[in-house]
Amino acid sequence: MAGKTSLSPESLIALGPDVLARLILEEADGNPAFRKRVKAALAGTKGPAAVAALIDRRLAALERGRAMIAWEKERALAEDLAATLQTIRVDLAALDPAASVQRLLRFIDSHASLFNRIDDSSGRIQDVYWQASEALPELVERMQPADRVTVPDRLIVSLARATHPYARQMAVAVVPLLSDPVLDGWDQALARQEETDSIFAVRQAIAVARQTLDLYLELEQRRPTWQQNPVRVAETLLAAGRLDDALAWVRREDGKSRCRFVAVGEDSLPSGRLHDVERIALETRILDARNERAAAQTLRWECFAATLHPQMLRDYLRKLEDFIEYEEQERAFALAEDFRNPYGALDFFVGWPRLDRAAALVRSRRADWDGRHYSCLVPAAEALAEAHPLAATILYRALLADILARAKSPAYGHGARHLARLDALASDINDWDGLDPHDAYRLALRQSHGRKTGFWAQVAARAGK
View 1: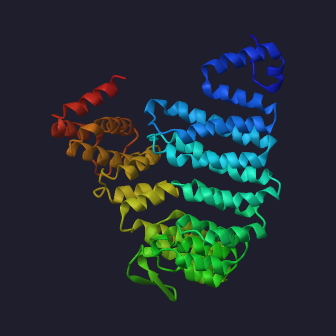
View 2: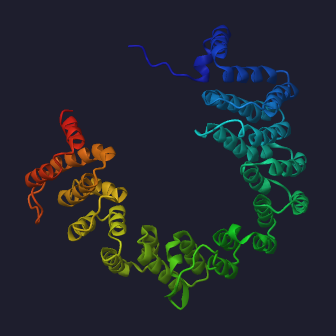
View 3: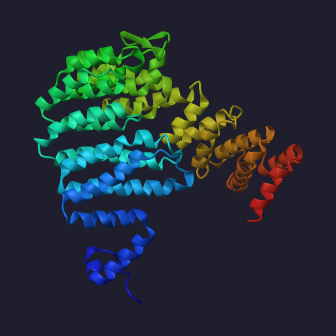
């Protein structure tokens, strides 16, 4: 038998120029995007001006467009845009990085008018523009340092034209690639612009790069209250080693939570904040950096007790002395077993994983499970099925009971699958622990819901597979 033929530069070169030219022409004839790539490669043999002229013609056509674009042309448009982007970031960038940066920014600016002409529900067009925005730092890095001085002024234009956050992302990403004098001039120019969220973000990125954190904080204070982000500010201050300021910001109220206060160690904080795991995790890192280990551990435990968030418990246990880790883990498991929300407790034990504890919880609270919480119960039942079939049975019965009790005909297919799982699990159960055995359960199911013909038709269809 002949060996597998693989595509590689060597194997293609071996075909010879005549064969390759014929294959390229055949593909280009039926693939407009590929044809554009071939033309760009040919233009590249004539120098950067030829490639730039090719791109400029495509960008001019894109900018002139006014007509609505039919949805069936969306895929072809996305491919065409991707080909133009590839020509900019590959063909032109190899010859003239500065020219490629200018065309890339012009390409991205076209999103504002294009998005008014198409319903991009699939996100294909947006994906191309995101790829374009992510390419800018690489191209700027390839520019000569003397050429980079032109980038900020051009980005100010893009920031003013943008209707989506592409320009903001690009501007923040290129800040570390510019010299301090260029950043200083850029910040002064931005200070003369209208203070928008994007302008604040770029100026704050510049302040961090230049280590002028007092300006960074001043800018944050000037943001509208609803735009301020204490967690982001605290993260920045922690990275800079300004621990007192970081702690003050991470504990700052941001208008999103108005809860009663509960004691945590010697301090106090809104009880609702215990559910903001990202913020609490950052606060514990700040406390650790301040050598306030006991306060950090207390906060981790309080957050876990409020949320059963597994990573918070892992962080808490990791910071303990080895000889008390097991004891504290058992204390955490006992807390979870008594948690006010049984679904949260079940999620925790399945995810930890402690399936024996999850099974015990299911059995002890067997009357509490409501099939409407299927996003929790289905994965839990699947996880428990092999080692704990009785617990899985309790959950599958709860799921099926909800579907049939509410006559949820669109979910009858799911119900039939649940019943099939119950049929399979029955042979693995010797002690039903007070539950009706499977045969009795099935008989009662038929007596109570025998008229739901749609459901039983689904059951029969599955049995006939």
